[in-house]
Each structure stands twice: as C-alpha cells, then as structure tokens.
Length: 48
Image (tube, rainbow, N blue to C red; front, top):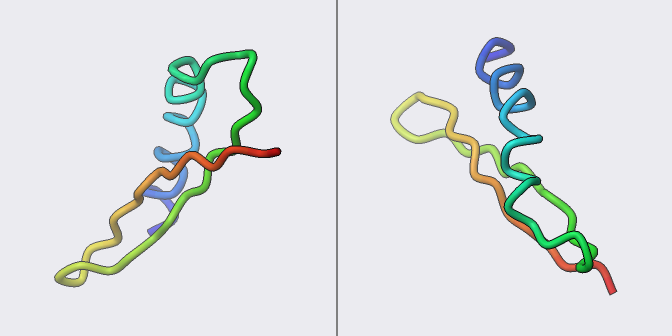
C-alpha cells in the first residue's frame, strides 16, 4: 500500500503540468478499494 501511495505522489507533478497556471486549482487524491486493490483517483478542485 505504501509503495502504491509513493508512486502516486511522484506522478503528481506531471498531473499539475496540465493545469492552467492562471487558475488556482487543488489536486485531491481519492483512495478507494476495488476488489482488494487500492485505486487512486485524482480530482481537481477549483479554489475561489
């Protein structure tokens, strides 16, 4: 589980590059268990 979480954190910067710099957005990682596996789903949330 820790290894999966670590790899997901490393992928975060590459995901941030797709976000427009002029818009303030926050990345939220949602963890859910599917068939005994941890799946990380990244969600972008706009900050007003």
